[in-house]
Image (cartoon, rainbow, N blue to C red):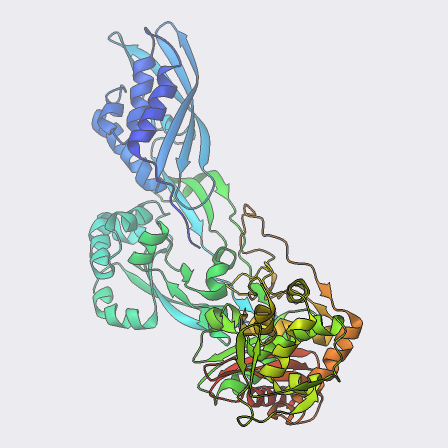
Length: 617
């Protein structure tokens, strides 16, 4: 669990305290004694505070300093609530706020300062109960914590998507150190780089009989420091297993690391040993859910026996939970196998009826940055979206169109590289759609308006603000000024899409409704505090039934005779080019819709391998 430390600047604290305290009453009164004692305590000017008591100044200074160490407190703040004066006796009630620095609520309590006149001056009548009404002679504060182990990211069946890794925790038993605590901590600080004062505060604030976890190591780092660590008398190494080694899809699940001095400083301390930090992926996005928060108690201990005397405050902490994803292991394994032989490729599979992400696999690309959030030219794969607008406008799949090698539309030149120079053919819209004839598709620009193309794009989620816990890209289509822009859009030349957004296009045609993607089903939001309300997901958009029926026929033709249709079962899809030796296959079989982006490799062959592996027992 990452715990933020709310450290306050002493100058600001002093200004607030002085304003609050001096406004309570006018001289003559116990004013100066109350003000100086609390301001001195709050700002760690213990000489000032001790001088306003009737106790031994060295004893008071030590008690105030020890209280801060024993509570591992980041700050104290005080506010006078009431002052009563009766002859030579006085009483000041105050409200205390102690920041324990553990991401728990502030520890707030009501305290009392008894005062009396000593040689004409008001003095705080010193006793440990000045620090807290329940603190007695022969007792001390302590903070008892119960950290919880990290929970796993799981697949749709509830099985962990990471394996246990052995971590090594260096810690101490305070009651075994005696007066050597500072020496031992100094040695550990030198070996690990952790701040000595932070380590010492952890030791001194803990119950003496409990093992205090101070530093966590991964295997490699532990082995490199093992000899030096084992040479420190008083430091014990305890192995711990935690679910931190990601399984496929590794970059979606994310990696986890033990804390280092650098991450501690960046995130704000103090961190607990045994804490782990999600570095990326879902491990980072759901860090606070996976780690929860530590159960914390403020207690008093008997100085002689070390036994607990009283519990002053308890925070149960937020329970950590697993993060349940939509990833399906069988589908993920098929995707991994399908991209294995390629050099550069990405495959995203979604459940056709729900938009749930079943698998994300890449080779030479990044699963989050490229497969989910990549911005790639759509090429003629975007003709699926354009065909929706054209079909609704009345263009028949059987309409004959020429497919010359070159064509100019609105001043924009289009080149079809799939046939010899100077040769034209006359085939149907459906056939040119299936083969990805750029010049034939571009010629249809005058049959549809810019608004109609934009409406179809929006209906297929292009540019929509969907919400995933990881970075993603829903696509972009520029404003369309004339026939040239429309022709480029139909051919996908001015459109960028991600493999995820194209997989959702296939799922929309396959199911009859476009739906936003889903990757995590529980928890609903990465923010466990509820302070940030996520934007609502775009609503599902049903397709026009007639346009969908025609598109299904066209996409059935698009997959026929390609490597995507290598085995049993009916495959729907389209193979498309998008320049730079990149190609797409976008389609579905059964309940699984996919988009494959591949460079210098047939994307339909990747799709065929995927569907074949998915069908295999």
